[in-house]
Amino acid sequence: MMRVLVTGAAGQDGAYLCRDLLAAGCEVHAGLRPGWPEESLWRLRELGLLGQPRLQPIALDVRDAAACSAAVEQSQPQQLFHLAAVSSVAQALADPLAAIASNGDGTLHLLEALRRHAPDARFVLASSAEIFVPRHGVVDESCALQARHPYALSKLLAHAAVRCYRDSYGLHASAAILFNHESPLRGSAFVTRKIAAAAARRAAGDTAVLLLGNLDAQRDFGYAPDYVAGLRALAALERPDDLVFASGHGASIRAFATLAYAAAGIALDWHGRGRDEYAMDRSNGQRCIAVDPALLRPVDAPALRGDATRARRKLGLANSVDLAGLAALLVEAERRRLGSPSA
Image 1: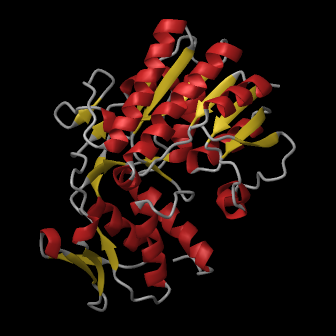
Image 2: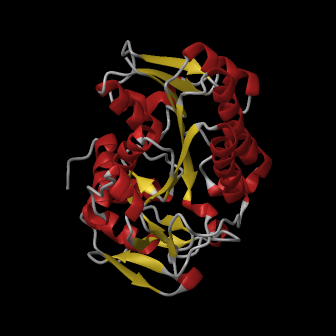
Image 3: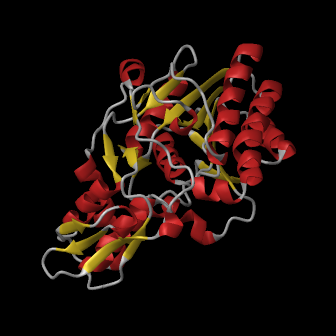
């Protein structure tokens, strides 16, 4: 029975990864923040994983080097997936030192723990496309590295640590360079979840206006379970590697919102430009979405899409859900949570 340690096990990717590992017969040590509240386990609960005998929750703060060392020494994992992180650009902007401690230092603590206690284990980091300089709007593994904001800086430190421990100590350490990936288990602070929840509420009769930031911001949206399957395939490679995980297609926040509201049975008409732009329900003329200048970032990511050619070839990475299907999945999940019938 393979022993696997997953940090950030209560997050979107962590929950799906625990599900897949358990289905494969693994013993999963699920790293959770010390003193985790019961409500933080909602994803594991929705997937029916709580109480499974081969899922062993452990308290693990990756900012604590001693705790990381103890967790690795005690669990002796054959694979370690490092998903715990400050994952919000806004949160990192508000507290950059906390983001660096969690994302950068936490990665170093785990790599050092593996070097000392489980040097044959395979390590996979959830890295980020935010650390790359695009070439003609596209990011692949050969693009230059750059940190435009504190979140990118924290992930760049983590990414560099993986390369360092791979080259200096021979660890089987890989990085999955992740573009945006969504699912019904997305956290409520993420824009796709906010949009899907607002669309579901609107369909149920709520007339509140959804406030968003930059509607022109372009993202490459993938489906989280596809990328989680890729993480496992990355750990299984004979030689470690750093690979881009992306759909290859860019879409604006406006486009995602249009698809999400359509999935809830609401056709949107867009009016105005920039900070004055808003969307109206075509059927009744009610305003549904508006721009809140306070939500505009001082530095927003450029229009990016990823080139996952190498990951498709080496890992079999696939896009099983298109953008419209992804929006529909998120809206349907929100309608279930509201107790609403399907559209």
